[in-house]
Length: 309
Ligand SMILES: CCCCCCCCCCCCC[C@H](O)CC(=O)SCCNC(=O)CCNC(=O)[C@H](O)C(C)(C)COP(=O)(O)OP(=O)(O)OC[C@H]1O[C@@H](n2cnc3c(N)ncnc32)[C@H](O)[C@@H]1OP(=O)(O)O
Ligand SMILES: NC(=O)c1ccc[n+]([C@@H]2O[C@H](COP(=O)([O-])OP(=O)(O)OC[C@H]3O[C@@H](n4cnc5c(N)ncnc54)[C@H](O)[C@@H]3O)[C@@H](O)[C@H]2O)c1
Image 1: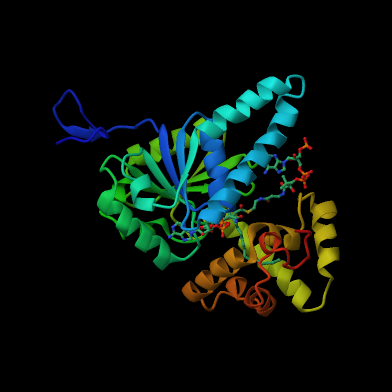
Image 2: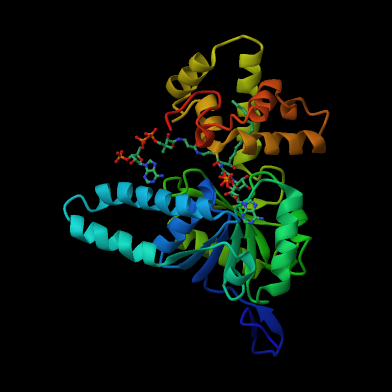
């Protein structure tokens, strides 16, 4: 049987066609998953947000609501009633679920934003592949892992791509769309169209380490921490220097705390394993120490800096 994702051209040969994404399951209710769910629902998609932990999902709903309130304060400054209706409309399109299998059975797209660990992501997609419709496209929001390696856990390499959002998702304008070697053109086009529907600018990436942005950003952040470890500048001065001297909105230490130091460590550990001789990817003793102490940045209340809870 031909799937919806396949059309027959006049010559009678089955070809893949771009499809419309309207129903989305987002797996992982942390900072990225909540943001992706928000922007997808704001663009009109029916969204189910999934996490293994119900208290995370309650928190995600609060985060989305808070973010929408900030959006509305600007967008509907003159009309608070229209603002409330806008929020209600979006929140109505988002449901939450801790049952990943039930939530992924009959949707157009499953996008994963769980912990940055290859084995955990592969295990998730292997299970999903068994229950999701053959029409469903799978995508990962990974920051640093090869899309093809994650996709290999499934039998749908052609319907698997990377969709890399940036933090905070509601404000950051870019999405990297990653075409792994077996990602079909139809899947790539569908994901690109979806990124644009969400109001983002998309760039096309090959499945190379860090895609475009992180291949440049990770060495920069690692150089900042090494500068500090060598005692060549305080973290406060380095942050001020990059904000005022290079016009970055956040300094490197502020940004690492914002991203989450556990995620930063997962990324650099993975890359240093892949290329142990590359000095740019050498792990940082200070980053390791902070993560071992549970200091994960803003989300845990302390990282390079301390935050009010
Ligand atoms: C040094 C350590 C080294 C170790 C690390 C090594 C490993 C490397 C790790 C790499 C990680 C990669 C991660 C990932 O794959 C890729 C990324 O996502 S990288 C992160 C990209 N993001 C950024 O670079 C963000 C930079 N920061 C900013 O752009 C801004 O600071 C900000 C976040 C937009 C916040 O702006 P501010 O002006 O500072 O703060 P305000 O609170 O005043 O906000 C301004 C304005 O925006 C509204 N707003 C803020 N947040 C939200 C939201 N979530 N939703 C809706 N609206 C929001 C806010 O209301 C304000 O509106 P206004 O009042 O102005 O009308
Ligand atoms: N933090 C960033 O700035 C950023 C930016 C772009 C991409 N990413 C990528 O997005 C992904 C998520 O990052 P984050 O910062 O949102 O992490 P996070 O720690 O905030 O959230 C991850 C969530 O996934 C949940 N989870 C873990 N395993 C799960 C499973 N098997 N099934 C369902 N839920 C599960 C956890 O309970 C947690 O709530 C990572 O791959 C990361 O590299 C992060």
